[in-house]
Length: 410
Image (spheres, rainbow, N blue to C red):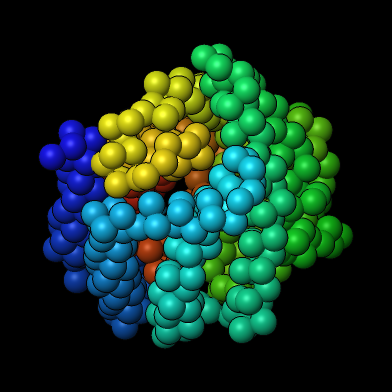
C-alpha cells in the first residue's frame, strides 16, 4: 500500500479516536455536585441543565465527527478527489481557474453536506437550551455573505498562491509567505470597518456611567483606541462576549449587547481591563508573530510536497497539479498543525491568566472580576469540571474555577 496513504489514514483515524476518548472522559468527569464557588449563581435545575447541554453537545459532536471521518475516508479510498478533478478539467479552463474551481467545489460541497448539522445545532440544540435567537433570514444571509467573502477574498488569495508556485520555482514558498503576511496585516486593519459590519451592527456605546468608567480606566492605563462599540450579538444568540479588534490606532472595543444586559459597570470594566491587559502585556503582537512564523514553516514544508507523485497516487489521481498539491498537503501537515495548535493553546491559557492578573491589579476589584467570570460561565452553561485532557488539548482559556482560584491567590 502507498506509504502516504497509510500515513494519512493513520492520522485521520487516530485523530478521530483521540477525539472520542477525550469526549468520553469529559462526559465521565461531569460532577452532579455544584462547586461551592457557584452557589447562588446556579440553582439545582439550571446546573443540571448545564450538564445536559454538555452531554447533548458531546453526543452531537460524536455524530458529526463520525459522519466526517466516514465521508473523508470514502472520498479518499474511492477516488473522490480524482472524480472532482476530472470534472473541473473537462471544462477546459486554464490552470489557475481550474484550481480555483477544484478547491471551490470541495469547500462548498463540504459546507452543503454539513448544512443539516448546522441547522440542527442552531435551531434544535441551541433553541432547546434557550440560546438561539437566529432567524431563518439571518441564518441564510450569514451563509450567503460567507460564500461571497470566500469567493472574493479567498479566491484572490488562492489565485495568488497558485501563480507564485507555478511561476517562481523553489523560492515560491517565500514569496507566498511575504504576500500572506502583508495580507494578514492588511485584513487586521480593515476587518473592523469592512468585514465585521457585514455580519453585525456596531453602535457607538451610549453616553453614561459605563462609557465614562471605561474611558477613565483606559486613560489611566494610557490605552488609546478608536472607539467603544456595542454589537447586536443578541440577533443570533443570548450568549455574551467582549473583544478587541484591529491593530494600532484602529483598535476598538466591542461589547455584546447581551453582555451589557447581564453585567454591572464594575464587572464590565474588569472584562475590558482583561482585554486591555492582552494588549498592554504584548500578547497580541506575540500572537501575530507566532501566526506569521507558523505560516512560514507550513509553506516551507509544503514546497517539498508540490507535485509529489507518491502523494497523488495515494489519492488515486490521474493528473498532477499544484492546486491538488495544496489540498493533499493539508492531510500530511495535520500532525504538525496539531502540535503547533497545542503549543498555541498552552500559551493562550498562560496569557489568559496574565490578563486576569493585570485586570485584577489595575482595577483593584478582584471580586468584580470573579463575579464577571461566573456570570459569563452561567450565561453560556459552561462546563465547570472539564477533564484535564480536554483542557490540555483544546482549551485556549483555563477552566473558570482555575481562573478564579488564581485570582484569589493574587
